[in-house]
Length: 289
Image (cartoon, rainbow, N blue to C red):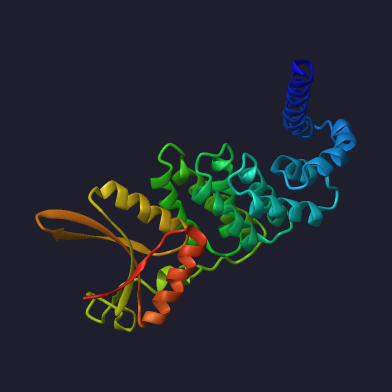
């Protein structure tokens, strides 16, 4: 009986080690493909796919080996949607963004690249992602939006020379257009940001746009201003105009993060749903005073 029990334990250990070995081998195959060696990966992929049909490593390897660009892109999209927190989530986002960028679909590329500072701020790809994101906005005609985000990223990533990158990108873009004889026109400010700005009256003083000052969204109240600033930057990185308001509550100062100004509660509720679905931040509708 002891002999049979030991054999069962030995068999289970072998099976477990075999699984670990196979999954670790996927990482090895991925590195080989990224290094230009695909033969082994092509041979082993069918077996790996049959064993691990929804494994993020397998999906990434499959996407790398796919020769059809559209199919490869869809595989990376599936990987991101199914396993956004996996080790290859940020790699998948970059692959999709690069596909759209190479295809000249700069707006779509920017939409994917924006996920990097939001969800993968510590990724090894972050510096390149920011540069590609800003350039995607510039070449798609959204220079003002690119400048706006560069200021956000400068605060979010103080160790990266974001200011230098946006300056170089704008200079290169304008020089390339001048050399090709293309007339450059100023683009309008991002519409969402523009609708929340203060407008100047005829005598030069600023006043609130009363069409949009009935309601706002509140995403948090913090005892430390730094925490409020972090959330504000995160919201602005997602495209939502946010601000910090200081409130005094029972001898304690609170730093409240609020988003936008809306004419109706229905408008505010709609934006609240968007913020929740895209950034997973819950908000409440408040009445502006």
